[in-house]
Length: 183
Image 1 (cartoon, rainbow, N blue to C red):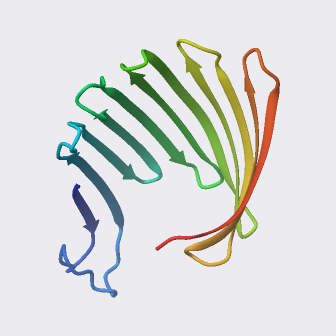
Image 2: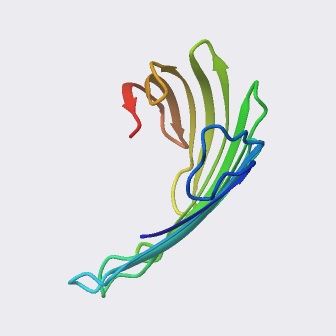
């Protein structure tokens, strides 16, 4: 995997590679660019993908693309996604859209979602609405509500409740509880 990261810090007398803790940073702009590829597997498969993310002053936007062939005899699956977010301070709004096109099964899925996250006590409450539009079968709609309680800067306890409905079927509900630590 190739990963290129550009960090532009607007500050006094700080070098690009080493930031002096006494520097007063006025702005932090980050741009991430990543790309990956794999060599053919023993059965002739291959995968290639790329993604880019830009974040600045509470605004974020990202795009990703991947094409995969699992073997020399199967057709490709192509996936693309576009996402954006804006942090207003009192709330963070986000949205994403994507498409999965599986040429082997001739299935195509369009995936869309919108969400909101708000600070609440020592954590964040969140809500998300998503829809999966299946070109060859029933559509799926999902609503998720949850809360992350931060124990430290890198560790949180979270819960999430989800209600899902598939057209023509009854709805289902699920609940998740977990502990997450970021390295």
